Image (cartoon, protein in one colour):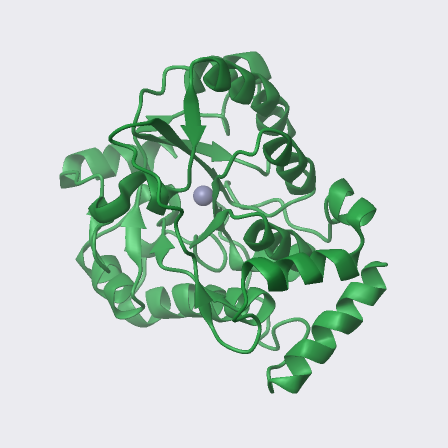
Length: 293
Ligand SMILES: [Zn+2]
């Protein structure tokens, strides 16, 4: 079935003249600062296997009529988060081997989320997960190619980090990302300028679960529970403990009447323009965030 999907997608992409398969650029070494360090080939989600590739491709085409003939962008649902209790769960550094299971959990709750993806993780076998995210209404954001500390790089380096991931995601999903999250929350004037050049808003977070450090599902769930209406929550789908916390998180927030939305749905008109940053923070706060992450 999966091979069927690849053939279907391959044909579709070949028809519109796009390259298929892995990116041809050679992979660079991963930054040694943790976070996106766990690389390797991984399996797509269980549900994707059950549904089968052909059905998934059909669903993708249905929700996104332009795909893959024309580039699409994420279309937020018309949700008024001034009226509803909204929360935006965001998952960074994947996709990885637990992402499929996470997508199954979100699907059961009809919950939408935002995935800030690392290009190398997509390249290492995550393309099916990304197509499924798009098909199921989740939003994608650029989290650089190899989780680099962008503030340590020159402008050309920052450009390469964002552009490679932007291109790969476009190639495998047909969509253009409009948001990015700098790894470690580390940004400066150069990063902002490059992000603006690619039409990307910079999205940080309101609630940090510190799930990369504290690998305890109950603790992670409790921290998400501290989220108030209108907040963006930082999580990482490369940790099994985080994914194991998600059913508790969804049940609790569901019970409290929350609607699970994507970042663009949450911010609505409040999405900062390209290069702009949400939330606005001063340099000292950003340095603290970078130290924590
Ligand atoms: Zn990250």
